[in-house]
Length: 295
Image 1 (cartoon, rainbow, N blue to C red):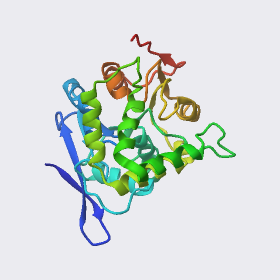
Image 2 (cartoon, rainbow, N blue to C red):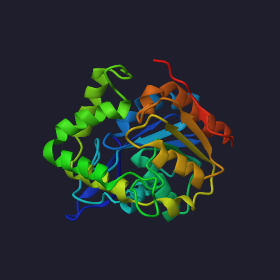
Image 3 (tube, rainbow, N blue to C red):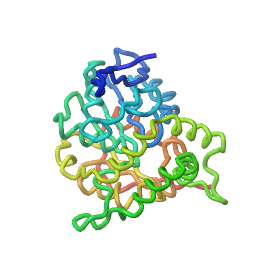
Image 4 (cartoon, rainbow, N blue to C red):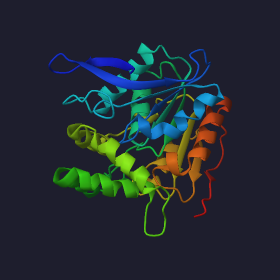
């Protein structure tokens, strides 16, 4: 298996990030996929199976604490996570990169662009992302109430397994009527999420809830793509996608009508097409575009 060293822990042990590197190493364009919470890079299976077939080099890695990566006690703040992303780009000497951040991963994209001046990056994409600032405050009235995040922490502390199974259904908009994913898929996600570090799961939930990326977004000066489902109950579009689009007025903003948080699966073919077009053709600045889903 492939690993990248991303510093050491408090005991001097190497922190290793597992990654997949697919497609041709001579490709002119590289896509780096950054997964969401509480999953791993395995969530990108359907993108990893398609994007390399279009002449792209595609790299996906497991965030520290998740998947096959090391599980140190700390380092789950966004400055450290952005430094981990930098380690991936630098170690593999990637150039002309499109960063694609899903949910929590969108924060890593924003913080990396701010801390490191967008080095090696030519484009960025925010998919169901937590940017610009999830928490409701006096100067962020469209954010999410602190009580919502307190409940997440309380439920993780009470019964992590039960929380993760319930969360998985909300993630994909599963209800008595809508069955956008199979039970087998939910079971797979649960297995991946439950294998993560308990500490990392808690700390990362706090990080994406409380980290303010508004200033980070002002440092993005490359073409940007924003995709969000308007039925996202995990990261509501009103608190995230719409505000990110306002912060990046030159970005291409695509709204997937009726889609939940986990649109990388529920609209995997459309997402693949949109990502490929963005990487290869660039940005079309226009009004939000909707995709209608029929159940």
